[in-house]
Image (cartoon, rainbow, N blue to C red; front, side, top):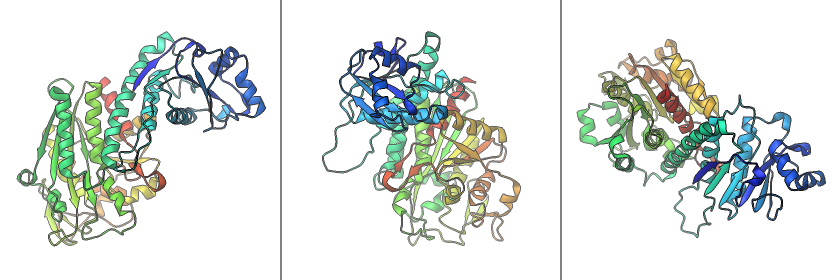
Length: 498
């Protein structure tokens, strides 16, 4: 996909299709009105006759047009002008690309109205434009044998008009948005693969591909079960005991910052399939437990984004990957295991397994003397109950770091919300038989899960992101969403520039 800007009048930009927006009540913005004048009032005629209402989500393709240099014109409804904001603009962009993808159009010039600069500055206009285009054109990597519909031909998109003073910022945004789109495809493809394909060994192989692609900038090590035992990751190994599929601990190092600069460490939960173990899950929707590795996929995609964007930052990715299966060797409620930190954990529920992987990986992060540590995990149904599918949960032992992540979500339209993490929640994890239990009941379940992880992060600036509600969609639109990569990429980009 090629992204470009244009500075001339929209009517003068040559392409297969020119895209403009119209508001309800027949109102046109500045660019659309200029195009209408060039077309001798044809757009206003359509609006006045009721052929196009301007409602949000509505599109109309005019295959033959005169007065403009593009061959076709696509009208996109933007809704009420008084309510036009960043969210409405994103919806309009999505509808425009969706409509273009249904055709054999190979190039388009998009001149939709933009909301106020305070809502969408030049950099984020470019970044969001490329990101929305890429995510809208994404096609799920299914394994169907039926004849596939042809892929969209759209290969070049021009965005504008862009003033000379804004061109550099918009183009930087387009480059970062294109990198985000490509890395997001990696994340979504990994999440959507079936669990008999996307195994811990498969994740390790894909990580090694990143090293091959980026050579000097990315180094990858994949530890097998024997090496994990030498690392004394007893909690991690306890989860994988019931599976025939061997675990992997994947370490990725992106070296883009100056030598010796403390890295950002990203940790991703990589349970490639979660049955719940002995505490077996209910059958309905258990197939969606293939998405329990979306935290791991987020980390691989974040390293890919950093390398594509050549960020001046050192980033380490840690991915404990395994299956959680029930058999005669599987851990049982009541078992006590020893973590890599030496702390003991009583297993009360084998379906609270993600925190067992993460606690050993978080302990491993210490050897990097990190600037900050952030983990990503589809950890608790409680977070989905609390926040729905709209916000990822953020909990941290450092409020400034939590705010940094929340702000990155606001800028990137990939929202997160900070939940409290005070000492009362950690007290709920008390055990009569071990240093702690691996769960603390239903109340505040997302927070007590984070409190468990917090017991392994003392002395580090750490934040936990629970993405159980945002990493994938169910129902007819079932599939990985690519979240929270937009947030993570903005977080890393800001840190690299700081």
